[in-house]
Length: 192
Image 1 (cartoon, rainbow, N blue to C red):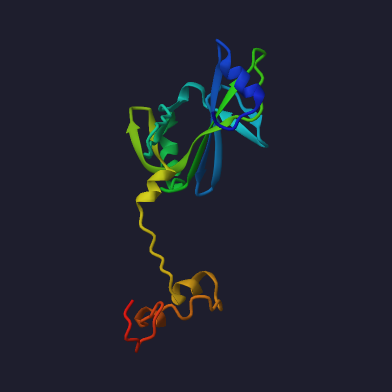
Image 2: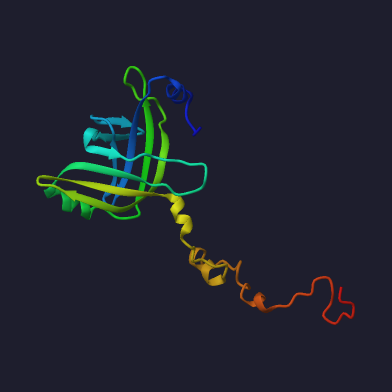
């Protein structure tokens, strides 16, 4: 089980659960906080805008093997005039975090919703109808970054990028051609 409070675990074990998803999307102008309810709600120091029926979230999957599984966020009912400003504010690769929260019988949010997905935005898909349009944003899991090679080396030049003046890797290039005689001298007749 993920890190969760006792109240959250108790509510999850009940026969009737009242889930909600909170999504923090990052755009070039800053983060946007939305959730699956109908009204705005305050949680974690932010006001989360309720999208209700206008927002949709694909299933969040996990498996026993290590693989990157993504989700798709869809916002429908957007005025076509706002489409260009929305697309100008979008950038591929910005962070997305989705939390799963639960409500108790009285409709109050149980503290400490758990992180259900953390990743980065990918290519959006736009569906335009006569008056409105919808935008679907694919979000990729952070595990997908494991496929990218890291272009860093254990060289003095590479070390200077992050730590100018550090001399810890100063002699790496010179030791590559050195022959080291381990346990014997170079002129030894006994080749053990």
